[in-house]
Length: 265
Image 1: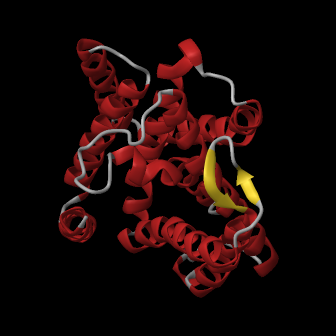
Image 2: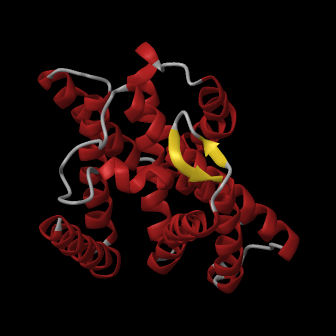
């Protein structure tokens, strides 16, 4: 057990240091490439959850990487479309899947593409706006996770989705909402100067993002449960796989990127 904890801590420190170095030290082209490679590894993990064979996993990962490279050539045209597709997916289809818990079946690869490629586009766009803005948006999800965990541990009694993730509670969700509200209002001044967001609109957006964060976590938990797998992979010692670390980011980042595009016009 101590060795597992040590591996978890060391991996977390390396991830944080590497991520901050990418955000603040690399040029935008290199950042887009790094994000594309991370997305490619996540797509390899996703294909594993789909029980794909060795070559099928590589083919899907290659398809995702090529998609990122092609779409990067015309971001102004392609990125908003990707984010709109992702928003429709998370707001329209995912709630249905979480309620019915139906298998995604043969649509699994398409779902994986919709999960990952718009997220990559959002990472690239938000970093282009401001590395600090991207960090602040991603930190919102981390705050939601931390607040939900500790609130759930302290006060959790009412299960949120016991058939999907038995450890999550409605009390934990309430804690996440409070944590995100406090954090979001604190960092609101990071929004681009061209945005015109009232406090009530900001509060509504933060509530929506908290719900999306929870949905992203639950959706991947459902997929892993259907695949009878605890983690998406073992790429990150002590932390599972990349998908396990970015599940809630896939549901929030594209929606944030789309919202900022709309309010900045």
